[in-house]
Length: 193
Image (cartoon, rainbow, N blue to C red; front, side, top):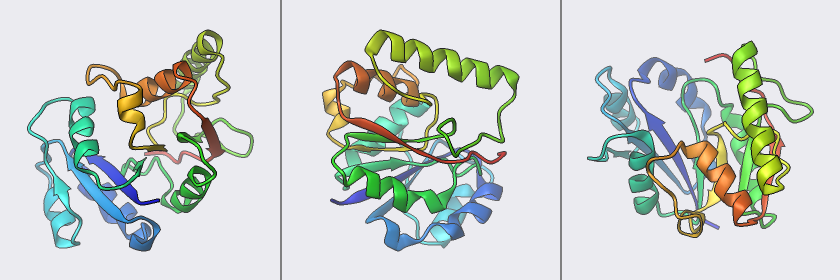
């Protein structure tokens, strides 16, 4: 099972300096920086450290990620935010869970044993409402539908008919549940950005 770590960026230089050294290249088969037009040195940092940079010509995060998914060589895509909100050391656990045969695995901030340090009252309630609604309408058992840190089989993009107009994380959560794909979660804290 070949894995591609997809990291969307837009002016993330300061965060990348702190986060990227914690990502061990042996954890995945490919790392792909997907840059949305950074002007702060993000691209230069990535190139200096030999991270391949993909700069889609389309606008919007969902459209850019869809283009990146097409060029990714992995059978499994790991979506990761370099803003400090995702813990790099959870990548091996996420991949290990995928190897159990899941179509998608989410790193949940709300599972037992995890906590979001980046939440305020409104974001916590918002996530709860979205997640509860998805669970109700699609008979899913998610604890976190609105987090980007997740892994999924590359062929899921075709199965769910990924739409560039929708929010990436919510769309993956809803459409995987709707198609009755095999999804799971692992607990993972979300530090402050």
